[in-house]
Each structure stands twice: as structure tokens, then as C-alpha cells.
Length: 243
Image (tube, rainbow, N blue to C red):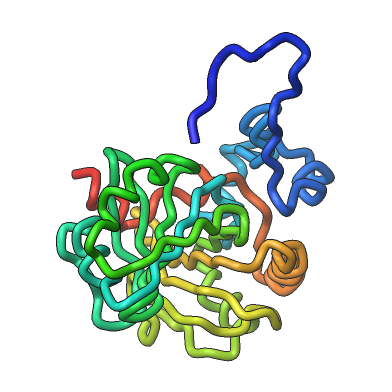
């Protein structure tokens, strides 16, 4: 999707809102823009970074575009977008299309969720589908991305999720589908570049508010606070990609 800097007189700009818009508003968030209602911080970025380094922070990431690839040719198509990196088990790997960086959430051999800048991949993806024996389903807006990071993150995850998400078991980049405070979610271990433990979640949009509230409630005893995306930092994988 592309946007124009000019619009006909009298037209109303399209406003994209996070599923957690009301939560962020109540917390005093600074939003990315009037038309992109995703928080950048909650008023004190330095304090948020300190909170993550000391205990833990919970941030909403995005907005993202999402495309679900399905079919027997999915692995072959994914290899084109990830420089051949197609994991044999559920995992997240870096992907690039049309000069835009994103991620391939490899859910299974025939199912991959591509996540990247909203609208950046749509136009060029069609050229890669030719002869790939795979279909692409637009899923933008269906899920909310959350990130939990900090020294207390593993302990919080132990209370949130019945699956074993300890760093010794859920290794960097590995993905699992499991309940998260009840609703099922995609969960991937993604430590911060500075070495802090971290996890990224994808949850259904209509369950995002519940998961957000439950995570903050469970994490309160561990020092968890809501923070902007910058406070949880880039992941170790993203840092490596940028070298």
C-alpha cells in the first residue's frame, strides 16, 4: 500500500489504530502520528529503558503487514526471501522482499507467516508466487505483536505459559504455539542485542487486550511495566543482520 502526501480537499485521512488503543491512551502514550496510533513511549523513554534493564518491559510492536503463505511450494518460496534459510522446525528467520526487511515466521513446512512494514511487500510478492505452488493470504491487522524483555522475562513467562519457555529449552529464534494467559499465541524466543532475555508474541487482535492486561498483572510482582518499542531494543538477530 502506498500513501500520498497530498489528498483531495474534504477527504478524511485513514487512521490505523492498535487493538490496544484505549489502553495506550489511558497510560498517556505518545503515538507515532495522528494517523498511526501505535505508541512510541509513555512519556519517559530513559526511565523505560532502565526498567527493562532492571526488571522487564512489555511493548506493542508495529504496525506490520502480514501475509500467510500456504501450499507445498511454501518452503521453496520462503527460501527465495530468506537467502535459503528455511528451518526444519518452527522458527523465525529474517526475510527481505523489495528492499524491505521483515521476518518469516515458519509455522510448519507448508505454512509461513511473513511480517514486515505494512504494505511494503504486497506488490512484489506476486512476482515470486509464479510457479511456486503456494498461495498468499493477506492477514494484515489479524494479529497484535507484543514483546516482553528484561532479566525477569523468563520468570514472567513461566507464570504466563504452561509450556517450557526457559532459555535452556526454547532457544533463540525457536517458535512455539501455546496458551498465553489462556488464549493461544505464537511465541518466539528473541533476546535483545544487549543480551537481555526476550520473547515476542503474536496474538489474535480480539484477544490482544486480554493478553496485555494479563501479562501486566502477572508481571507486576516482577517489576514489569509498559514501555515503548525502543526500550526493549533490537533483537540479537536484527543486530547481526545489520552488520
